[in-house]
Image 1: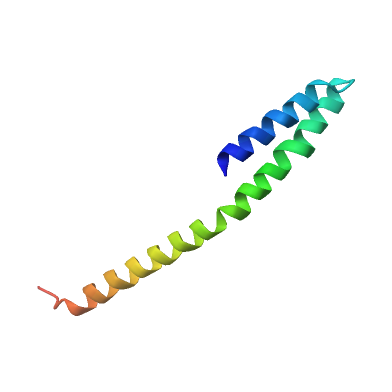
Image 2 (image 1 turned 45 degrees about the vertical axis):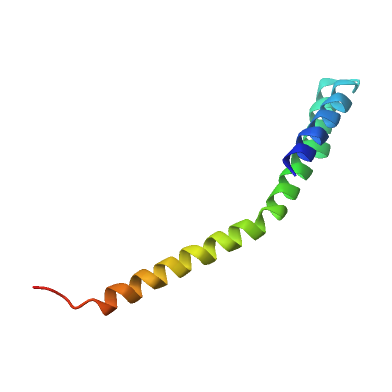
Amino acid sequence: MHIAAVGWSYVVLMMAITEDSVIAGIMTFFLYGVLPVTIILYITGSGGRRRRQALERQKAMQERQQNQAKPEED
């Protein structure tokens, strides 16, 4: 997925360079390039974040269960 983002960023950069003014080039780069790429990368990464959070919760639950199962030593 990252190779597609890099490719799209290159295409948008070339589009921005051909704009008539600097402001139009900057707006083209951010509105056609940066904004959509960050949204797509955020959406495609949500599954990994969800799995990572579930793993962290499971580890924390296992640690709590192990701590409760141990007799306390004084």
